[in-house]
Image (cartoon, rainbow, N blue to C red):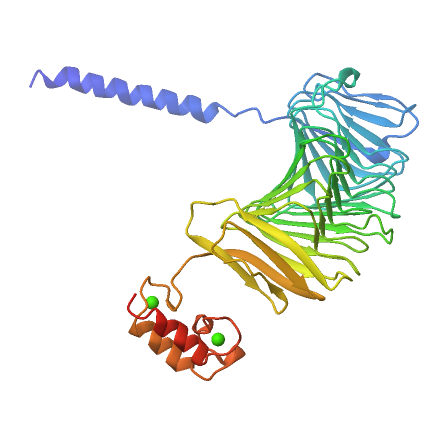
Length: 442
Ligand SMILES: [Ca+2]
Ligand SMILES: [Ca+2]
């Protein structure tokens, strides 16, 4: 078959071609990013200049400062230094700084992050003691004019604890931080002096699933000050704890926004945010601030004699949000206004707790909630259903009646299906039965 010959040649050529490509692919070893190792314990009274452009760095003995300046540079810091500041310079866009069991002390700030979108990768246990904690000054901080557009990521499997006399971390306007992987990052401002986290603009704080962020200080997280209308976004899929650790009557708030401006605290994500006050409320939005809760679980715990939340505005919640309020207010009754941000959905409010209630229909878009005494109340949004539709299948029928009758006369935890307690008074009795029968067949 003569016609087979060209095909055989062609197939042979293809096989050879593939072999050559395969050989070239096997020979090619991608040049991984060069990691520059810096033992910080060796940085003392002598200036040091790192070589090359990929790993550019230098150390000034005069200012006791380590400058990291390579774009996409990758640095690994190890060791202990009792007086060292580190600057991730504006030129070091996308730089990665690994901290591997590092102990740093500083008589000023420890990390000043000027570069755009740099990462701090944590390995092992890392500790910082300083006067001022980490400063995220924003991209291209030349002359102090451009603060915007910087996001700093903390990732890895280790932890970092910043013990600061001043602010644990300082976020200038329009910058953000992310905590990712299984990293645990804690900012602790000691001595009732400053906030654990301090933000003066539209900051976004992200905590990924599996990661933890702790902020402890005079106020745990403090946002706003003079900036009108700023938004502090907490996007938490993992765990965020904000603790106001103060005896001062004007501080001690877990999460605080706005002094004289209409700031917004927006909490979103699928994780858990716990804001705990000591001498202040768990969450304080001031007189003009707004609290928005979306897709999240929030625990607000008031300090001694303090309400769980302080706000004069409506607290906005979407259908996935759940808010637990631990009320420790010294006043007998506290009132809050809630508003749904999902006005077209088929949900209603659900209030759980012995001393929390409303006179408004639970199907209203907005409700006024009162909490009496020292108590814990839960506010959430639930799918709407007909009264008496115990199994929530859309009909009130014999199936619902049989669940109710199986629980008739029972109380509390003895009730096998709590939904049989239609009026949620703790007993399944004639009141529940009459509610069900009123809707039977609907
Ligand atoms: Ca039913
Ligand atoms: Ca009942």
